[in-house]
Image 1 (cartoon, rainbow, N blue to C red):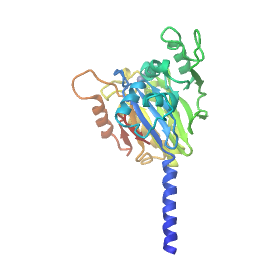
Image 2 (image 1 turned 60 degrees about the vertical axis):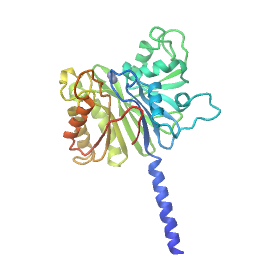
Image 3 (image 1 turned 90 degrees about the vertical axis):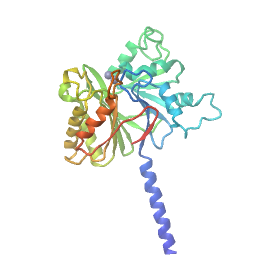
Image 4 (image 1 turned 180 degrees about the vertical axis):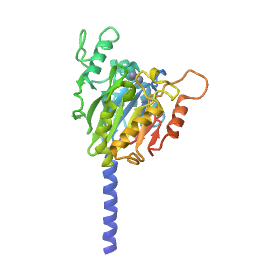
Length: 331
Ligand SMILES: [Zn+2]
Ligand SMILES: [Zn+2]
């Protein structure tokens, strides 16, 4: 009898603790893994809390093509389209399961997929800093570049998309999900880009749009993002950092135009390590590398070079992950 009781207790503790951690992870699907110039594979990710049904996107450079590639790779095998739905799986995901777009900045490689899909999309919120939403409305949804699907700006407003201007550094609830989010401005060669810090109960992850190093940008923006992550790191609750490395170390600082190289990313992560408690404080932290540019030149793929250059200098003990279009990741 006693043994049986211990066994039941053991099983319930195991199941309970297992569920507790599983419920607080983040699931990512890579819709586009490049920072340019490969149309059909530009920066975009789906994000959801493990326990949620609904997604948001992190940027939207490639949208429908990314969903098609992910479906072909079997990444959405677990998603069942209800019999009552008139849509195929890609349509169902886009129209019913994606509840909003988080746009880091309005450069085309981060928004092209959203703009192109808009005529057949469902109504959603576009979340961005005020300057980013302003750029979307004045540059694209203006009846010159494209019809105005927004709820502000020039000409007749079709109001499919609701611009949600995010106040910097304030928590907001993400409608239709159990996520909360806070936006931090980033410096991207003269324009404002954004880092989005997502939390789901105790767990957190951060997605950074295009950014240069603080030293080159003469900015304090990354420093402020790092400071905000310290409590999560110290509590063991930071599940991952998604950040760009656009170029190899061969690119000079004057030619970075608001981007990072492997050496600059390591320099920045060392700042974070120092703030989080010094040597070893980032051990095993997942760092997802986005925005590597496709190269037209003969020779080694820049992705292979960047992977090697990061590995050589990785005395932080972090795990660098290179996402692939159509594949899923768990943070
Ligand atoms: Zn970009
Ligand atoms: Zn950019």
